[in-house]
Image 1 (cartoon, rainbow, N blue to C red):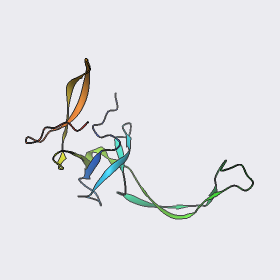
Image 2 (cartoon, rainbow, N blue to C red):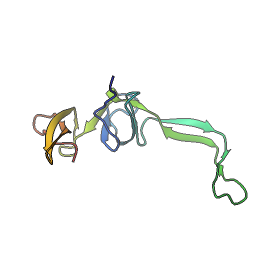
Image 3 (cartoon, helix red, strand yellow):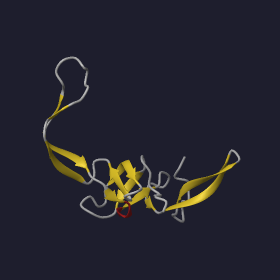
Image 4 (cartoon, helix red, strand yellow):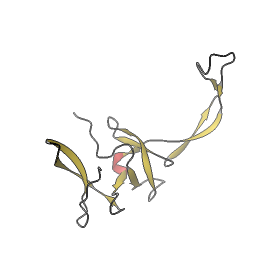
Amino acid sequence: MAHTMRIRKGDLVHVLSGKDRGKQGRVIDARPKDRKVIVENLNLVKRHTKPRPIQNTSRMGAAGMTPGGVIEKPSPLHVGNVMVVCPVCNRPTRVGIRDKDSHGSPVKVRHCKRADCGEDIDR
């Protein structure tokens, strides 16, 4: 089965459910195999980490250390819990795919499915 998603890295998304419902953020990482995305500064979790030496920092004597303590980092959200925000109408929208001719070869382009917009999301 092909792992495809209509949300890509760099898209602005609107969160539909969960503790961050109603907030918007940029997609840092898309994981099509897991059907999950990581959104910048949303769905933050706290992780307790030990200080660890950094490998091959400068090769000049002592190794550097990554700091320990409680670190907040974003965790993955399921694709079904987010919607792409259309860059033209600035509203959350469903995403459709249409074929477009670019330099003699067909290219699949994502577009806004709102009735009053319909503009391309990919520029």
